Length: 157
Image (cartoon, rainbow, N blue to C red; front, side, top):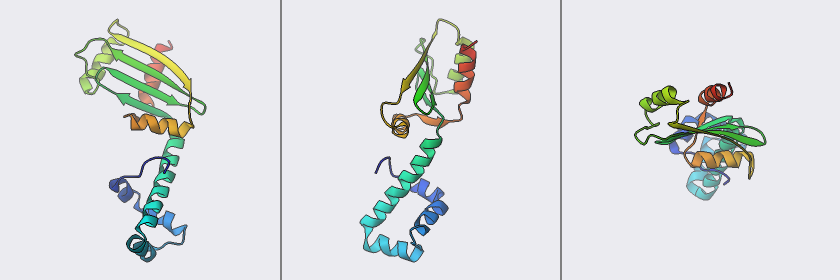
């Protein structure tokens, strides 16, 4: 398995897609039930293959990631060959970016001495999708890029 097996909830949400996946292998519901009962290791392999297919699609389409912690915001723009980052750090220890107030504080203090901004870019050290998956495993979430684009637009002025 290349990535991580989907959760039960994710499989339930992707029930139709999983059914289609099994159908491409000429496995109907009766056959699937039989495989689960008689060859559970084969069923596990099918779940893993499907999970990897879903992850591959999601990661291939990923353009932006965000990772919030108490005093840091990491914003990533995932391009084909490299990843660009904007890291925002609050120098005031009471600031908490995990709440709405923290983002308001950031808006009010972005260009003061209480916020450090670091820009970076780095070529992927491994395959693109694996690199993005590792960031997700570390707590990053997929994003529409709105915050990255806003901050990038402001600091480029």
